[in-house]
Image (tube, rainbow, N blue to C red; front, top):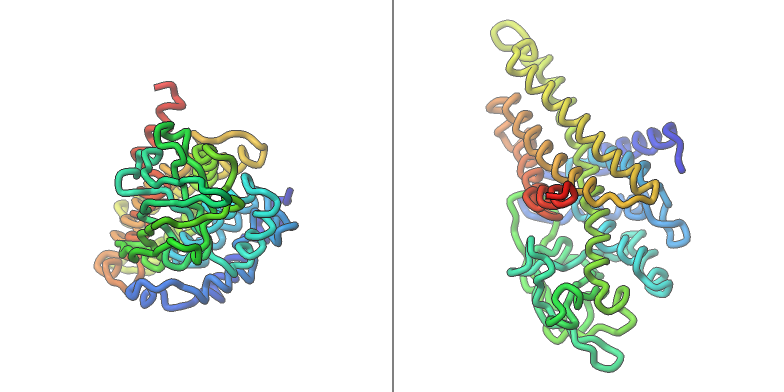
Length: 379
């Protein structure tokens, strides 16, 4: 377990790394919907993809709270939210399920390469008729000797066009409903695995999203993740970690936006005084500060619970819900504080807002998070 001093040092080092190294033209990449491969390689070389992964598989083996501190720093220093989103999907939706449910053979085969960023990971569960109703998926898997044959399609697959390895969920026994769902580690070169089309998005445009087709896709039995019918448990476990951690970098982004806005409010003059002297402006800045600190508190509580080995399904939902809603509102406030300049592409605030809006949808919509929380409240 790392000391607070060590955690702060790691965060500061990541801020410095991001500000000096992740300096690609994000506006251009966003416009062209291009994946920041150079940034990915730099992050992998620093060890970001392996922060929570044990050292025996090449990771840094950071504890939960230290990982949160690190991701905060990354979000503060890096403005490419699409890259950060891709890294989050890689870690929490691919690496972590393998680490938790994989055989030793699977861990040794995939984790070192995933940690080094040599292969890119993702996971595919969402379908046209199985979004919020995720366990209603129609993709099937049939056992044939030493292989499984998968048929179906997936949408909204983060890293879908660039991933080398995707955790795919399919149903072995449709009559059993969610109890038949099983996870499979599908490599991009497996026969019948087809990237059907790239999906364009409003925000997070540097993250590559795709629709996938599984056309008699053959999977070795050795690539089944966990037992047959264990897919629901794997997905639930993955979602707990993903919902809790996926917006840790957004805390850094919110802090950066606040610092930018405070500085602007001190410098921008209107009616012979800094605009920060006007109550309408200062109130927005205070609200941004309150959102940042309360969101950070929820995130740290989730991280502490996981560090203590405790279940935190409700806390994960609360963290995801509150940070996503707060991030969007703080982006709106930042844009308003900058007035007409905030609406211009060159200030990058409009892109920050577009990126933030997606956080209310992915990993379960805000409505789904509220439903989860209500259930834990006994409602």
